[in-house]
Amino acid sequence: MDWRIVDDSEQTLPWDGTSVGHLQVRGHWAASQYFRQDETVCTTDGWFSTGDIAHTDRRGFLKLTDRSKDAIKSGGEWISSLELELAAQSHAAVAQAAVIAIPDVKWTERPLLILTLKEGCTIDLDTICKHLQSYVPNWWLPDRLEVIEEMPLGATGKIHKQSLRERFL
Picture 1 (cartoon, rainbow, N blue to C red):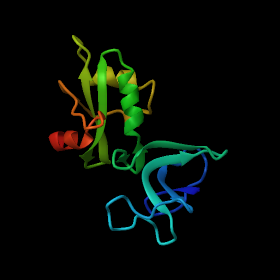
Picture 2 (picture 1 turned 120 degrees about the vertical axis):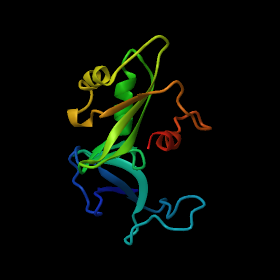
Picture 3 (picture 1 turned 135 degrees about the vertical axis):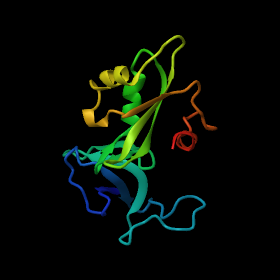
């Protein structure tokens, strides 16, 4: 399999470990469409768009950072919902964390952090942001925090982000 990382304009990004974009693959084993969907997701030159956000370092190591439907595009830069969730979950008060994109006039999208807390714990936006600063860049910090009683889960036990989008957007 061959792979490439492209920006929103389909321009190939360098293998520098920092240029984050859409993962595309090509090869004999690559699909041309998703299951039960009629339209192809391949580019005109045969690259399959995986729906993943990734980057490749100089040595050719590929790192998947998020799914494109979950990543947040803020001011033209990607924020990984996965990395932000993992950082939030490392706080002692947090039981579960989810991050979704919310519209923003200036930045297009910004992260909304949604948490469930451990029994007897409380947290506010300033406290969680102070904690997150040791894990993620400052511009990734959420502008808004929602604490909920129970995280909606799908059939596989994963957080059902579509339910969160419906609730908070």
